[in-house]
Length: 145
View 1 (tube, rainbow, N blue to C red):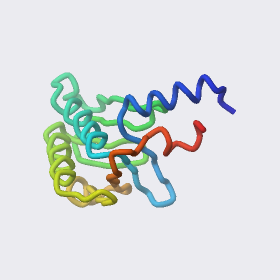
View 2: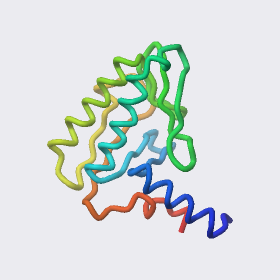
View 3: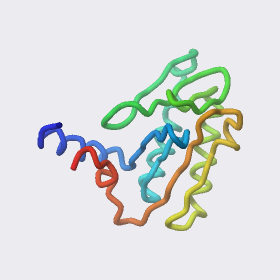
View 4: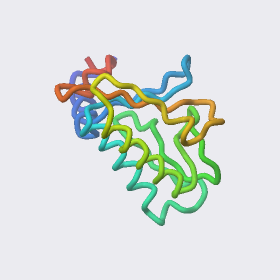
């Protein structure tokens, strides 16, 4: 059982990240949950990784969030697995643009899948869930309450 200090630190890290994520192995999908601003931050993180030429070599990666198990990575083919969201940097930049575009027109409460547009043969899906402006990403993490 984590200490209260650990839980408070985890809550703070979710809020700083701006969105909540979880990997659902039963449904084989990554859930990215947040407000329009929070999901925009997800797009910014992905775009920043994909725009950094230091990430061009195969298998470069970055970990996100309090638990650090969401990874963006460089790989020769686009893929979404239980390990990461990866692909060639231009494909990752396109994914960030696509997610941002879908966010612009989505209504609060919308959920949208990005697997078919990014990596249709991938075993895992990537689902963004748009919440209202009062959403607190730390509240979604039952482990830190």
